[in-house]
Image (tube, rainbow, N blue to C red; front, side, top):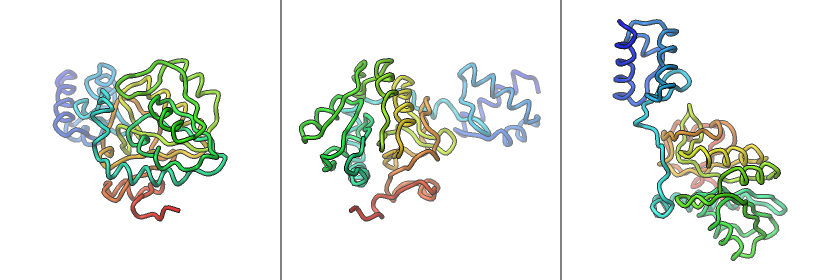
Length: 252
């Protein structure tokens, strides 16, 4: 099979199946794994598919843009509140808490009763609500991203880079075994990544719709930190050692 024909077949198979392994492609196309790997690298470079560990996924299955926060805040609210309530219960006296922008992290705010903790966020509306509840809250500086109400950019990055958090709570647009925790916007992803790296304890709050979804930017591997979800999540994620099922855990 000619080189261009093989790459065309790889794209057809990947788009049809949404994801495919390198071994499967080698068998289907009667080619060596090294040849398929080289083709995948080239197709990935040309932004025709996304190469992942052990194979490839279709770009048609990758979220490349954020939905406006006003469109997302009424989705899966029951699940989000359950997850957020458990997350809020983990905050202790004297914690330095990072709260990421997002609708699920926003659901935490009414449940945060500990006024002996300090709260830092990159979300303007989160900061306002926390301050109204009487908490000590610090808002990162930067450029306000209207769609997600998040502050992003180099000023935000430098501000967060100087801090160390005892605990952090994060939203994620997608969670997959291969790509970990993902978000569509690289600028916002960089803020998530640096804040995540500076947290001693890390929790990603995820309703079941986030699993097996992939966005363009990975900010952390799936085994770094804990996932808080509910019992409607897919079994393979519930079985992970770092997954907490909020509706099966007693909240103190």
